[in-house]
Length: 351
Image (cartoon, rainbow, N blue to C red; front, side, top):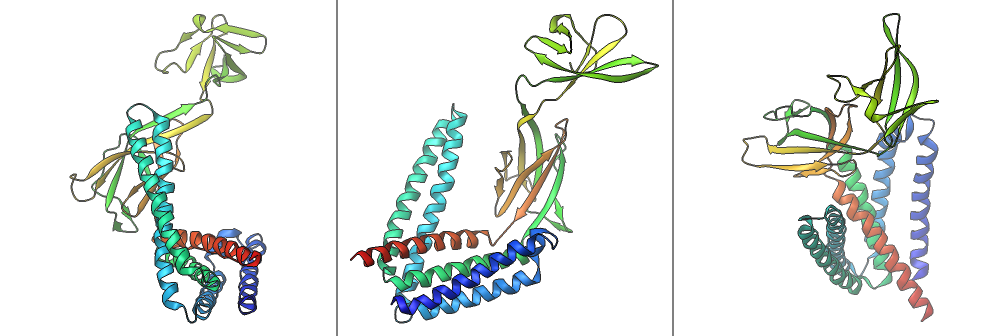
């Protein structure tokens, strides 16, 4: 059996290795890695890999194809359980970190994560019983690679992505548009929350010379005082200028000098958004967007990309990637099949 699958594994490994070399070597001189991913050469290579892996799975499962089909079904449910466990586990930890009333939601999400783990364990064991013939694990691993290729091609031709700029408090429109087509929802940014590191306030010292305000030096706040070189002023002796929202502080003495507060480094920023259906306001909900923590509406994902310095303008990215579930399933399938094959091969060798 090892002799039968040895050439197939070597051929697959060499082909995938060649693609990795092309990615690394071609990504630098030719327009960056993004150009390589989207180029026609990579699509031809992807189609070649998919066809080869499909042939390898079909030929490698000869005599056990019905068993392989059942194993693939069980493995799919096992992967779905892993996805539920990962998603609900992360949400449970995030809600628990918020504390307060969110603890109830954290407990509920934790229970769903446990159910997902049990679901994955049960169907993973059933998949193991169906695919314990060693060469079937290799065949299903090749099918998982086919899923990755199909998902990547699906996104290459069907992915929708564009950026959306919103001002805080701007009234929600009936619908947002992309390339002349209406989206199934609209986005309204109700509030922008910017959290900065404490004790990191810096100031620019301005002097009034020849009818103009000129920057002279940089100052930094230290506790209840502001220090600039050899000079130091307590916050109590500084006077806030009207209309500056506390950012402009007048210094005592002559000539006229003003401290202008510069915003400190941003620790985190969050956008509180309201998502509503494009047709009417009957379906709507609020969500909080964070960097790398998107919200979802159907199969759309809404990402927070950036905000202006004053926190009044937000840039969002809307993305719809229908091939992503296939890619995720294929990657997890490859990992599980390779692990099961290696573990089973080790046990059989020891026996």
